[in-house]
Amino acid sequence: MSTARDQMARFHSIIPAGRIGSRLWPLSRASAPKFLHDLTGSGQTLLQDTWDRLTPLAGKDRILVVTGKVHKAAVLDQIEDLSTDNLVLELSPKDSTAAVALAAAILMKREPDVIVGSFAADHVIAEDEQFRETVREAVTVAATGKIVTIGIEPTEPSVGFGYIKAGEPLGIEGAPNARDVAKFVEKPNIARARKYVESGDYLWNAGMFIAPAALLLEQLAKTEPELHAALLKIADAWDTEDRKTVMNKVWPKLKKVAIDYSVAEPAAAAGLVAVVPANFSWHDVGDFAAIAELQSQGRRGNLAVLGNAKVLADSSSGILVSDTDRLVALIGVEDIIVVDTPDALLVTTKEHAQRVKNLVDALRTTGHEDVL
Image (cartoon, rainbow, N blue to C red; front, side, top):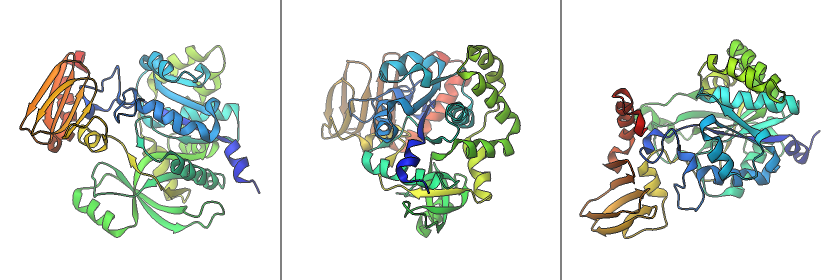
């Protein structure tokens, strides 16, 4: 029987760094998505924080980053230890299945028994060692032939996340918290989300998956055979001189589908998915209201400040995020959100923070791509 140390020797991290984060416009844009920004006041970007959180698990040479071609220079500048051999550049966004499954296929070509773990580049996790303990437990479960997700204990009846219904404990040595997954549930309405949270049987699905690459790809072959075949074609050419030619030919035709639908949900129905509840705090910093809650540095009264702006605030609360050095004065405004960039200014409130995405959609449909 393999030991936990043997299992971790098989482990390789994948960092999908692709989501723009449209609810964080105008700070986050197609050319500079949210993972390239410091949104917590830590002095590092979310991508750098993710890299530092993962390196103790398997080492700097066993982390593969998947990002857009347009972000190559910024990613390599921020992660100096990232080898170009471990950088996968997408020609265009194709959703999470293409990103994660291609990375898994490339790694399986290099190491047939590799266990992969996919962790988004734009999440905030405070307790790094607790995170690593949870991942080690998930790797132990994955080594038994499972696709493992890390479930987040809900803090509120949120409609912004999918939910995982946890089943019976698995009783796996070295993974005392692991449970079977009864089913995945789509993002619910508020009434149903409240019932899920009150029941205590549901966890948030944060999109973190740990699995033997071979098992993950085997499941994809069952549900999306054409996509599976196309990704294997790219992976076969990846470490050869044909990489660019094959990528340019195959990538544009790939189907867009989330890995939750292509792999996780059907695998759960087949009894192949487990969950390890997180023992760490987790935030996806989905909007500026979430950042305001997280931001603890640079406070002036009840106003959180990110950036180098000169600020005068009187009887005001909320958050100011600045990409300029201009003076910003706030008087008598509560729960306000101000985002100041050289070519766009956003002013809203915490209550309406989620509606920024609608604004971005409107800008796109009215031909204002130059500010997106």
